[in-house]
Length: 182
Image 1 (cartoon, rainbow, N blue to C red):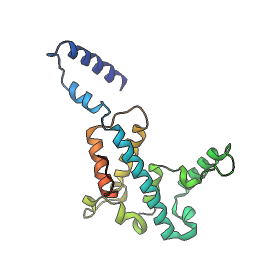
Image 2: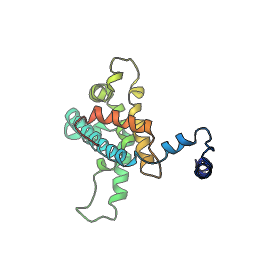
Image 3: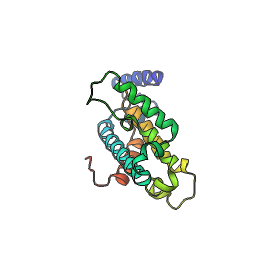
Image 4: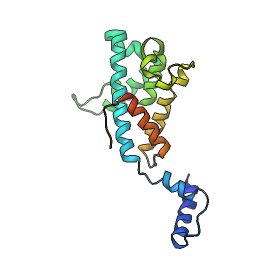
């Protein structure tokens, strides 16, 4: 990634001095890397993550009652959530501590969804265009994996591409149709 950026930066500088110099892919590279979608994408991702976090918890509570956290999470996710909470809470004062559930992220939610697919999440976590298609739950939840990747990259030095932004808009319109980001 660093080499590409270096070469594209040199090309851009040459292009600014000699307009005839325009190597194939240079303009597309800068369109995809100008960060124009980052701010709005960040807000969409944050809202989607909060929604999925709350919705998963609500569905697990409805399915498993008071024991929802232990029964609804795969053992690995349950263990990671508790470990992360212990690490975060070790130096905090009483009242500042976080709950294990608050230590999870998109990739954990996907594992929870996969673990409880048929009885809890299949109906609401299958993209509308995939509802009539046969397929495995892992395939039907790939959108969560992609959302997680964009989220993780967006929190670092990264430019959300137009295609990724369109994907985020699609997921946002599906799960949060009343939110407006314009």
